[in-house]
Image 1 (cartoon, one colour):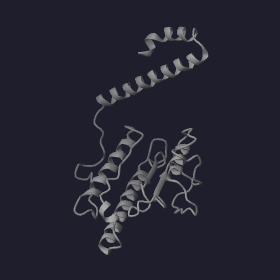
Image 2 (cartoon, rainbow, N blue to C red):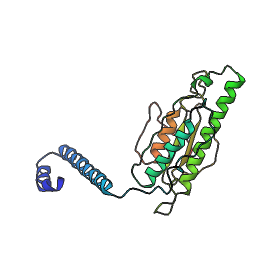
Image 3 (cartoon, one colour):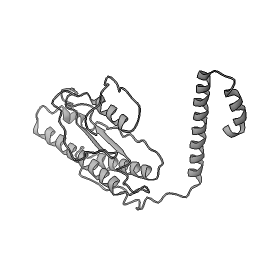
Image 4 (cartoon, rainbow, N blue to C red):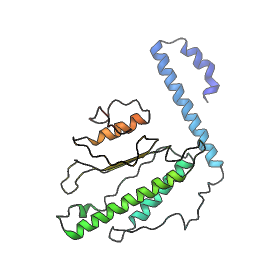
Amino acid sequence: TLDLCLNEAKALSRQVSTSDRRRLDDYFNSVRETEQLVQKEMRFLHAPPIDPGMTKEQFVTSAGDHTEGEKYFTYLRSQMKFVELAFKFDLTRVAYLWEHGRMHGATHHGNREGSLNQLKGYAVDTVSTIADCLTAFKKTKMPGGGSLLDETLFVWAAALGSAAGHTGRNAPAILAGGRLKHHGRYVHFDELQPLPKLHLTVLQHLGVPAENFSDSTSTLTLV
């Protein structure tokens, strides 16, 4: 471990230049963080199983499904429940879910009523699933006194504004949690705003010293 060679490390630091000392400090900090992570994982291996507070049968609740018989929203709800439990018990602090594009065919609707209804149903179920997830986060109280939603910054964004036309204009996005000052608002920008602006806004709100994200160097006025 780092403690075993701490004296040698300090002696080496006194013999090198300032720039090399910074590099050594970065290296030792990385080693220390890795040690702490390994120790945490070791404790997790020997810890008793976490009780999620529900039975296996209660874990997933079925919802209306507009994906041609596929239980996509049952799957999506179960994935969000996994994220909720992982955040609640501090098993991870970052989670990413990828949209499977199950409605790709319906997006090329050609204004056909059947395809449009299918697309609307899919959108309603998606927003309903997200709402249930955020509600569960809000109801989950954390040791610090706030809710799990307070401690989580949730971002859901579409890749395109119009999948039928393959255009990125007016891409919908949901931003919630993270102790944002203004919730419950619908914002439509009069001028074109690249989606990377939203990601840069999120990074800076989290305290990440990022000056740009992709080709965006400014943030949105949201928080």
